Length: 246
Image (cartoon, rainbow, N blue to C red; front, side):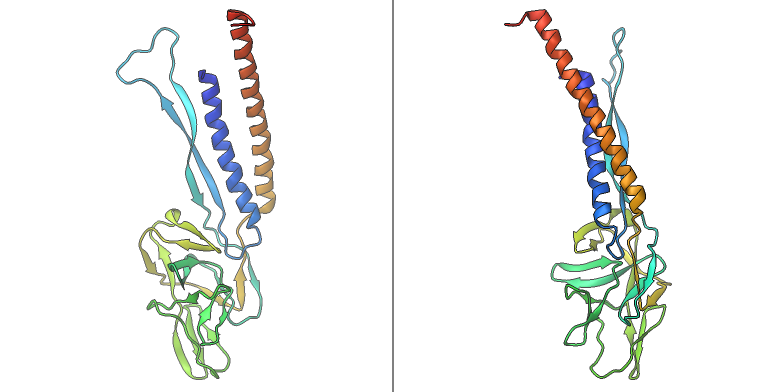
């Protein structure tokens, strides 16, 4: 395959990756606590080592996706009045216990299980600073949750909700159901800034993401047209060199 085609195909692959990520952001524009992702692209220089380029020779620069980075800006906070809806005004993540292990999330829509455990919609139990499920004994009365995560009822202080910071948030891995896997060490947040009776929305900016989608779609179409034109050019060149039956 000729160099122009391989160069432009590298750009197509990167543009395709960008469109996938932008589409996922748009799909999660209304997902509580969702943090948008963005593609980090770069170039890769293809050149022979310790060899002088021939006359007219040059290095080839390919486009490549270097991965994604996470936008950690807080989303808008909406008041719900539900005492177990919790929003994080600062950085950090709630921790929940799932069947697959501990997971992180900023989706603070919690409720009570029949056994009194605080859990998310999937039944994953919210963990305390000690890594244990938070529990509200039956008949405890109204629930008060302080900014540091301390839970109190008429029975007194029941515990403190765990909120952790991740040493490298960009290494977080999506685990589905708005949950994340921490692939680097975590520590308890010193100032979690929990807001009771509220939910943090997605930090996706829909208008901006749709604009990105349209721009990338147009660029992808232009690149596709170039590839088709280059293929036609090569076929015509071969026909002229070898003839129609070559």
